[in-house]
Image (tube, rainbow, N blue to C red):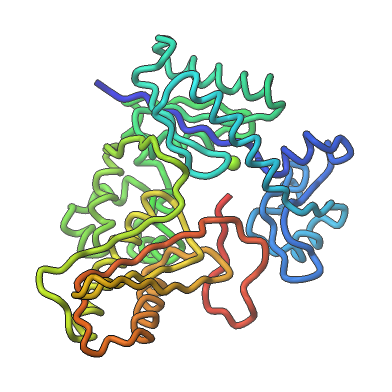
Length: 360
Ligand SMILES: [Mg+2]
C-alpha cells in the first residue's frame, strides 16, 4: 500500500511572524537577520522584500542595496518557538508520526490518521486552515507517497500552496527535475553533473547504479533509487534533530594515526550522506574517542556557518584528532557528529574558504 506523506513548510516563517505581531511591518519589505552595517546575513525576507531579489543567506548589505526601503528586524526565536509548538499541536490532531526538520517544517505520515479522514489532501487542507485560523499564518503543503517528492511539492506553489503528486505521476515528475533539486546534490556535485551533461532526472536515469556509485560515491545509490521515485525513508517520529552522528567500535584497537584516519574517512562518508538525506548542515563538528581503558573524550570545533561537505568535516576531524595525546592509548571507538543546525546571522570572516550557506 502506498504511504501518504505530507510535508508542511511555513511561508517566509520568521518574516511572517514579525508581520503578524507588528502591524506596522505588514505589506512592507522586511528582512529578519543580521544588521546591514556589519557582516549580517538575511535569515528570512518577507515576500515584499523577495520581489526586489532579497533572499535567505544573502548579505544584509546586499539586501539593502537591492531594496533600500527594507526594514531590518532582529530575530525573536522565542516567538518562533512558540509558533512552532502551535503547529506541532495542530499536526498532532491528525497523526503522531511527525518528523520536524526545523522550527517551521515537518513531515507527517498520515497513511493511517487519527480521525479516519483517509484523504491526505483533505488532512493537508485542514491543517493549513487550522494554522490560518488559530495562528494567523500561512503554510504550504506537499502531498505524495514519499518524503522526497512531498518536500519538493510543498515548495511548488508557495505561499499558501497545496500540491499533490500522486504515485503514478512521480516518475515523470522526477525525470523533469533539474539535478540541483535532488537530495544531496550541492553546488559542487551539480557542477560535476552538468559537466557530464547530466541536467535532469531523465539524464541521471540513463546511468546504471554502478556508474552512479563510481561517479558520485555512496550517494549514487540514493540517486539511483530516488530518480525512479523510490524513497522508502520512513517518517521518524522524533524530536527535532539536534545532532547527527556516526561512530564505530573496532574489533581491534587502533594504534596508528593512519588507521584512525582511514576510519575517520569512513565515518565522515556516513555523516555526509545522512546530512544530505536529511538536508541538514551543522556548525559544530565533534570528535568522540573511546580508549581501550573505556575512558572517553570529545573534542569539537565550531564554524561561523553551517557546513555539510566531506572535505571540511574530514579535515576538521583529523585536526581534532591530531591535537589529542594518543601515546600508549589504543583507540577502541571513534565517532563524528555534526550539531548546531541553527540559523546563520553573520557572514564568515574574510578569507574563510567555506561557502556561505544557510537553511531556513
Ligand atoms: Mg519555511
